[in-house]
Image (tube, rainbow, N blue to C red):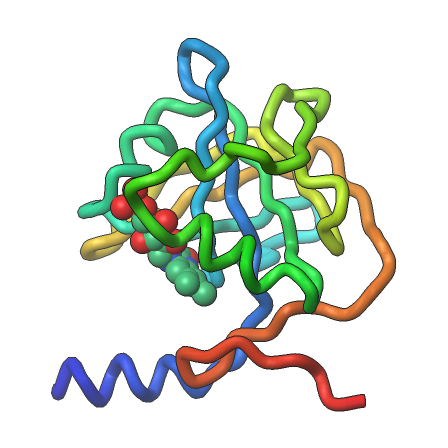
Length: 156
Ligand SMILES: Cc1cc2nc3c(=O)[nH]c(=O)nc-3n(C[C@H](O)[C@H](O)[C@H](O)COP(=O)(O)O)c2cc1C
């Protein structure tokens, strides 16, 4: 199995883009761009995200009781880039508020989920975080799409 071919093949599966968020023990916000967000179950309402075990954010997601998922709209590509890059305060100058569980939520996002962590599954170089949705909200607009390693918009 050629790893390059695996990456390129996976990139042909178009996804939305979301920012997964957590609070640390000092209640400071952290977040990262994810496209691994998937709905898993309707009853109970379960979703998952996959977190890279080699990244700095793993520690945050290993400790948290709750996490948030902010689904991005098509005007939020810059936010996606910002939350995928290191070397700066990702929340600096960003409008956000705490949800009922405390997790950071972005008011402009297309949909917002607050989850209680139910299971952590180590799968290769990622950890799958299965969360039970305790609160969700939906906004208006079109999604930011990720396809072939590029941001796209839905065709009109
Ligand atoms: C569109 C897009 C989708 C991404 N999806 C994921 C993902 O599902 N899981 C993940 O661990 N990293 C994903 N990343 C990479 C992380 O956002 C990035 O490595 C992380 O924010 C780096 O922070 P850290 O090294 O401080 O952990 C994605 C990046 C982009 C641009």
